[in-house]
View 1: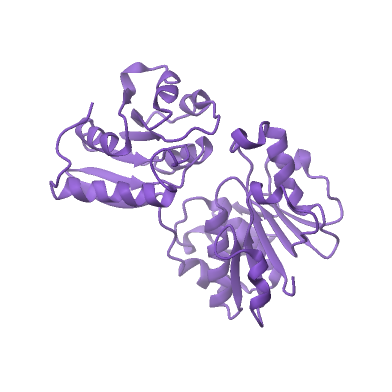
View 2 (view 1 turned 90 degrees about the vertical axis):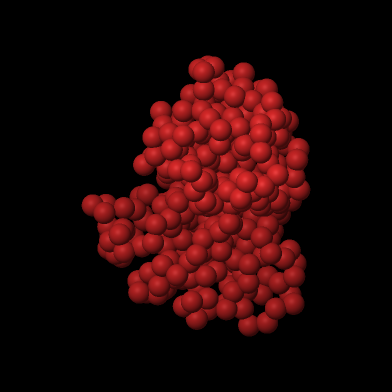
Length: 341
């Protein structure tokens, strides 16, 4: 590749960090192009001139075919259970993610999370490591990078997951952005659709679209982020990826009062819920939303499915868009009256 590559992988948060890096670098005057899992294939890089950086989102599927790939800065956001229907074991999945750095040398940087699964398996001792929550962290409500205080936490716009921000800051500091430019970029970023996105409020019920949550860990994070609410109805379901849903159910906070299971794996999720008084089942997303609205009073209805979308939809984007259409129809009393049982 003729340009320095910033490569981002991880179970959750890849697209957000890629787009956040693109925005921050562009607002600081750099010329960038996003490629890989978001945007065009990396091979299209040859068609662009005068780029400062290529920012590449890399999935575990793509890492299966990595042989000579060597990013200038590699970012590993997190590793949590996902895609085991393809990779078979968690160790296989971890090895693929860590493989992002296998060709990196002393001229390269690795921004990795301070997560035991990552630290235990990271075996490249040549690359320059920046460990999120160790080298870039929050202390006394201040953001710190290698002992330098960048800013107060409340000077940064609210982000869903702060670790994504810390990873982004680490990359920007490696590149050499000053703190003012970093803050400008972070505070002018508008966020991405389908990621814990507020949709509307209907009769004191608040609707959130987190359709991008296609694994249990992402769903747990979303629910925890909404800890200011004490009455959440959670919509779970879709196409299974060989998850053990009981682990997720057992770790849900107490503010989840109802779970509505829908889609192809609805029965599997339902059977994993020990407290049957909170468990409900509906055949599809539309029925689940209507039903959730009927049983929720002064609460939150959260679509955070913990599953792939391919049983009903072409992708999480279509699922999230359809969810928002259903909510709009509910608000306008259009064509979705009644409950499908």
